[in-house]
Every structure is written in structure tokens, then in C-alpha cells.
Length: 165
Image (cartoon, rainbow, N blue to C red):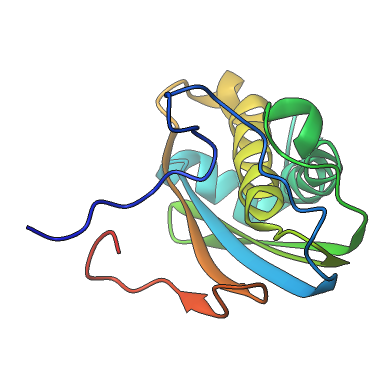
């Protein structure tokens, strides 16, 4: 039987805990994440023609929402550390009948920025839904996933398309 993975945020007695990163040296850390939002052909056509719905520019608003969300991650996820982010970038692109959102987050700190990257695309995806919902309630957020993280004790990790690793 393979070794079971350990959960860093759960103590031996099963209680939630914040990881102590005070002994770690600050290093540069980056993370990229993506979210896919299926908006459907009619909404995609309108976004392609105008870039907007009644509430305004969808992709630009989603990008800004994602940036703002990354900066608030420790307020949203109970055991996340406050991290001084160096940069948050969000790319938003219409690809067929989907919106693809990708974040890039960097810091120089004692813990990584994976949660900030995933929070950024999650909130950006919810913003796409919010801005387009009047045109169709069937919009789906199909995936949110980490694409890559660099730095820290575990080094570099990249997603593959072969499932969870």
C-alpha cells in the first residue's frame, strides 16, 4: 500500500491548524492557475462582437476582480497566511463558447502563492457568471486548477492532463 499523503493544515489529533512558516527563509515563489467558464454560443457571440453585456466590459471586469481577490485570499481562506504579493496578472480570453482565465502570482516570502492564484481565477470566473447571468443562467464554471507552482521546499510542480497527482 502506498504512503498516504499528509495534510499540512491538520494536526495529528485531526484539528485544523495554520502551518508555522516562521522558520523558513523567504524565497521567490510563483503560481499559475486557470478557470474555464462555458458561456454558450449566444453569450460568446455577444462577447465577441461587443466585449460587453449590460453591466459593462466582462473580461476586463473579471480580470480586475481576480486581482482584487488574490490580494484578499487570507481573508477568505481561514488558514492562509497574509502574503505581500509582488504581482498578480490575469489573462482572460474568449475561446469558442468558453472564457479561459489564467492567473500568474509572484511573491518573495516564506510560503507559496498557489491559493492566491486559484482564488484569483475563481473570483474572476464568478464575475464572468455574474456579469452574463441575465443573458443565460446555464453558464457553468467547469474547472479551476493549479497549472504550476515554483519555489519553496517542494520546488517546481506542473499540472499534467493525466489526472490528480
